Image 1: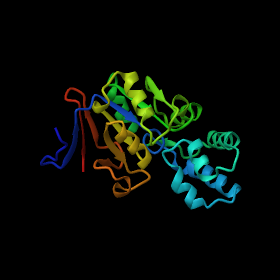
Image 2 (image 1 turned 180 degrees about the vertical axis):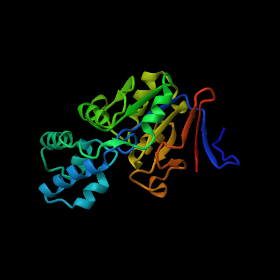
Image 3 (image 1 turned 30 degrees about the vertical axis):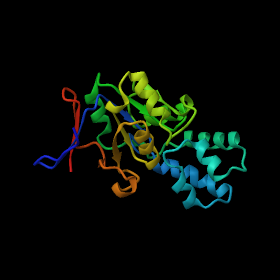
Length: 223
């Protein structure tokens, strides 16, 4: 059944048996910390800051470094980025309504699929007060990062849910493309990009108006 609008202007996505969340910008508000680190990295190497910030979101650090500065030592630069991000804690909080929504899921299947290193993911989730899911897929678990669908397909496999019955919640074009390639349903969070920039049919600013109806496998929110 296709998503529809009812008379109360409530948007609905049906047929959801698992929810796969991105982390940064989706569950955790960490954009300021991320951009501070990458801005410093860009200045350190004489790179255009705006171009770097436009290129990094939703992708593993290693992929961004290879794209932006292929002449640099990848391992050394990846280590510098990771150490710098682990040192940042100011302003890292949960996206509005995220903790409350997760608390309602209980035994409903869900996972986090992030382009972050596992240590960094644990660091940020703890700072934001987000509980750990049973399944946490990080960049350490995959050979190819987003927009490749490997991470999302791995999470679906671990949850034993058909990819077509999974909802991917993302805040970046790269992340949404990964979900799209995995054959999953999509919801964009407009924490760092607009509805138009995300190119996703369904978007929400945060989780404050989102409701999961577990018995009907339905997600709805007011618009």
